[in-house]
Length: 233
Ligand SMILES: [Zn+2]
Image 1 (cartoon, rainbow, N blue to C red):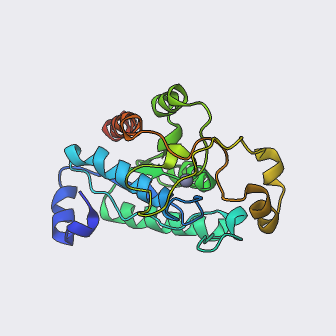
Image 2 (cartoon, protein in one colour):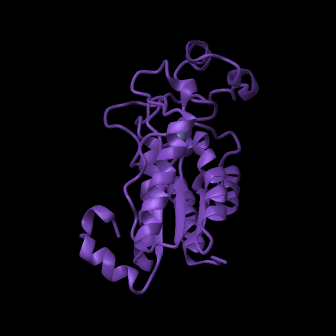
């Protein structure tokens, strides 16, 4: 259930019999030839499909994340660590005030990991509330399926190329890009990162058959749904 398709009265009625909510976390950043919104599209979509049969409300994706290394790529936007933590904390505080007690954050971007650290701190400050932080793409079964499909998989490679993240009219390269050296990239400033990465793919093919992508997606949806179901304590 999308929050944008509910009114407050319906949320109030929901809270009389359930206290779970889902908050997708995304980013607006370069993904080579794919949409700048890949991380937002995927985290929101996997959350919506996982939550649908359970009737749990899914809040709008937090469309900006922490991604300073991509700032030389036009269209990429990065929040400061401090801003991001305050933003996510304000959302959690708002949800708690209204009666939500079990919140699943479905994250689509590695740079947002600090929301997971915040969740642990926030739970200590708010006994009786539970927050789970879920990186949907590297959860155990989803990541195993990715590895089984093609072990050379990375940011902006085939593993993020779904029918709902590719752009019409953009032809993907057919070669397999060699994996970049992540340790080297981590110490580069944004201009050097862009010069080093070129198109932005970290390594691997740019696309794989839709049937293989759907098989990965189905596992990701099921794995995300299980976290919504429990255990919560
Ligand atoms: Zn991504």
